Length: 109
Image (cartoon, rainbow, N blue to C red):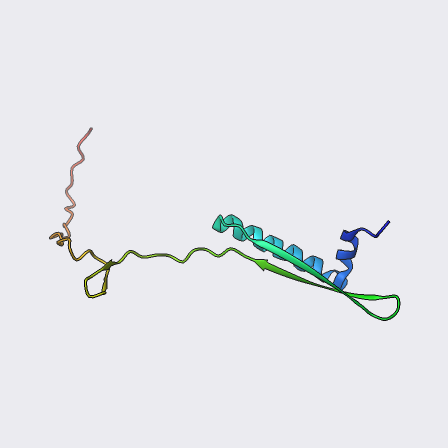
């Protein structure tokens, strides 16, 4: 019966690969909860010969961490291709700031 994969995985790179995968999984989980988007982790193990009866095992952890969407802004395009924050087809209202009097009365409802 072959040795348990988890035991071997924990020994690769003196346990550093296992720790890195654990750290990346925590980072991915946090990003998924924050962005509400999915992500992936890919763990690659390479095995190559090292003499008659031994092999070298190396690992690599790669993650696709979801990113938050960049904030968007609404602009209105004019006929000349200029972008405006306010709709040029809509007239501006003559708004002004109103001074507040200190002698306000409260009216019961």
